[in-house]
Length: 356
Figure 1 (cartoon, rainbow, N blue to C red):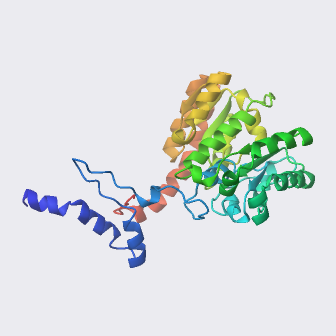
Figure 2 (cartoon, rainbow, N blue to C red; figure 1 turned 135 degrees about the vertical axis):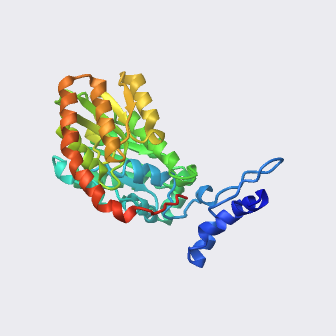
């Protein structure tokens, strides 16, 4: 085969056509816009992928926006806080309907799981024209009277930013009045290309308003915080079980199956372990700078990765009893994993995976 034939066989255009060939016509047409070919040399501009364009204010879709990242991703799995969406009721779509956040309400002392509710100020035309701060105060008061939560978070959506409602001053006023921690997030959807900006706003807000507000030290010899685990498929439940079995005390998780109480005394832990480094490494760095809390990277994807990370945690503490316990837990857990792998391996052999 000539060089020309090989070039033609591997041409970007042909690769793209083969990628979308098996899609239905309508799906293929949409997916084709999300695959671009970079042109080389000269004044060629890097093309913009459709799925990475700026979010359009007021547009609701599965992709998400700054508000979705702040409310839905980071604070979404926190079960003991009332999160109020300040905006039209449609924005509440991102409160709990689009993400598989899971939590264990039975672990809460009062049994409340506020994730089952969608709290919204339901702004109408009147508030858009004359301002919605009064209605926000009423919503905070109503939530407090009904549920007596430990904390209340307020999330500004696109219209709030456009009309200039000051959610932070309202939160400070109601915090003084009610005597609980109340804080706001300026996470208007149009602020970010996607959810990522919302992650930063939420994490910085939690660090500023919650972390370090409770100096209670939990019982346990080896205390850790798990950063960058969002319990999408119930992962945090399993990790909590494994940590407990190893004798490792989990103070808080940022933020799968999380609690405000855990955030508040996260600074009392001995070590931060980071699962998703890209989304939250700066929180670990801020905690190290302010509280002297060291951190390490871990990876709990796969049984082998989990075993490696458990050993890494044990090595950090340098305690032989902990090391022995971790090895015993790994030895006890792995046979079930190996059995499951053996059962499904035949069905997966010779299969190909294409990641777009």
